[in-house]
Length: 266
Image (cartoon, rainbow, N blue to C red; front, side, top):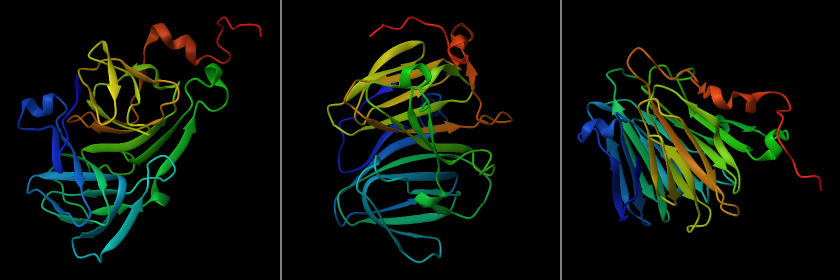
């Protein structure tokens, strides 16, 4: 499923637990757009909430912590700021400039201390950067938190930098846990293709791709159009996403050392 929205100032809902369990994602997912001076409060008695500053500047206050000012001109040259808060907790933000904030939430009866992840806490790694498949799947993977680091959360959240003309979430793979991709292109007219529910979708700026039912997924961006996308996963009861990756057997040869395929002789 691929979703686009006519965006407005304030909270824009893409998926809601009240509608078919978030269309099978088991999460609320949205984009918050703030103008300078706008404020917003995140709190819910039954849901944990996580948000990432995509771009802009915020003054952040949560629980009894002092106010912290964060600034992120763009998600390509600057790493992530991300809040994770338990049900019943609260974080408040005030925009110091135009800002875009990705938001996801889900039910969780555990209590834990809210945490604002800073850029130096983000696990960042470049993959496919050693010439594999002619460099066509080189990308940066940023993991904010997952089951290994936060087993008290029912979610996983991170970012990928998918370079123009290259693939990510590749080779084709699947896992039982539902996942969402939210796209933020460097150029607003950027586009690419993402696979979900067994079919390809043309993807664009501020679009959301939902992968569910253990479907294979992979994606590619058009040359010249770099993309940063949020990737959020909902653990299943008794079956958390533990970096789970089941590669499609028919494409497993791509993972061999020096896989054999034709190359032009320039």
